[in-house]
Length: 219
Image (cartoon, rainbow, N blue to C red; front, top):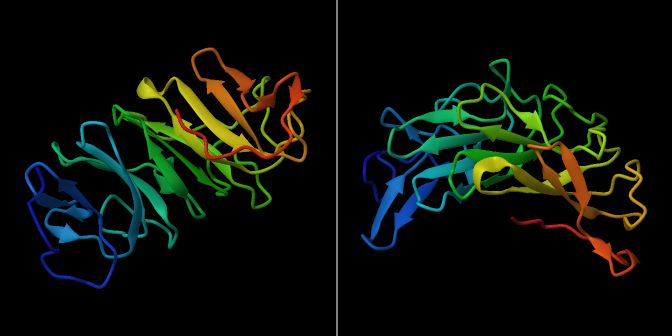
């Protein structure tokens, strides 16, 4: 495992990520590579069920590649020491801010949102899309897709992911998907089955459209 540290070896005034073992009463510095702490701000940590794998956002350039001056999403395995910049395409970082990472219970899948235009299936126009990364993959996959795999016409955010990464949920105010029971102007909550390529409206009201916005999904 990474060194057991109560405080960074040499503080640089930047936010760092720690994991707390409540049973042992010990802190583990997460945002470090080869003994060097992250050289820029790291925030929004999320942790797997067993505490071994963590995802977070960071602008640090000395953890797992360039960040382009934007918050990128990173994933790390605290046992093997592996660290990956999740928000990448063809080895390049996302060209805009990435936010709201969520990790699956098994720790092998991470979802996040970004308005970056160089990620697959980007909506464009400054609108946020939702994406998933799975351990072993070299890139990310767009998950904010309609029933016919069409892109939304509005922000797609606040994604969540199930154990194993098959199911993802997200919130969007997209009005182009043709769900008769969708609240307009939204947002609504949807469930995506990645195995079968289907998208289901979740936030439907009894007998029709919900009468208000729905968001903050969880699986």
